[in-house]
Image 1 (cartoon, rainbow, N blue to C red):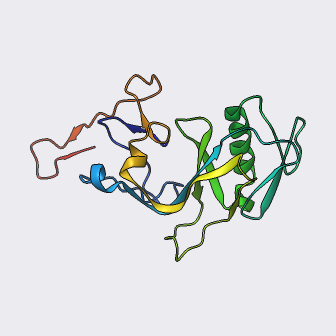
Image 2 (cartoon, rainbow, N blue to C red):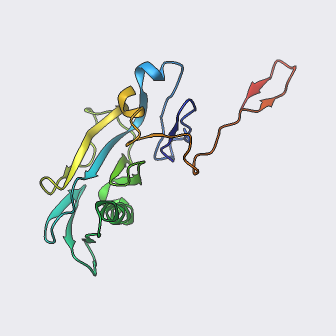
Length: 184
């Protein structure tokens, strides 16, 4: 998923069917960051929202409640990270209405929203995100570029090499000794 391994590679499926279509990481990533075909934004649960507060994404408006969420309601978790997990689950349940897919980031109080439509901001307008005030907010607005500083920030994408869930990337030589030789 969205992991950039220190001194490693950021690997995603580059087909247009992928929510991460168009991520381009080349030799200048350390200077240029990553470019995407689909806009992304990062949302944050700074502090847990109070019951009855709302957030909006796409055509959906969600109301936070203490427990027993149904319909367009989201349970407030014990911690901000629990609330974010509930937000991600609800957005993904309603992806046809929200127009986005949500993914957890390294810091579990953050999530990245990926537009389900290929397009370049500002020519393409991604779904609107409406914060609840100061609790659930947009940490990074819709964009088609992830800057170098963001890629290197462990709260967003970069992971420590000690992360046990990180898998090393091994390049394998194919067709060695022929003109069709390549690494994959």
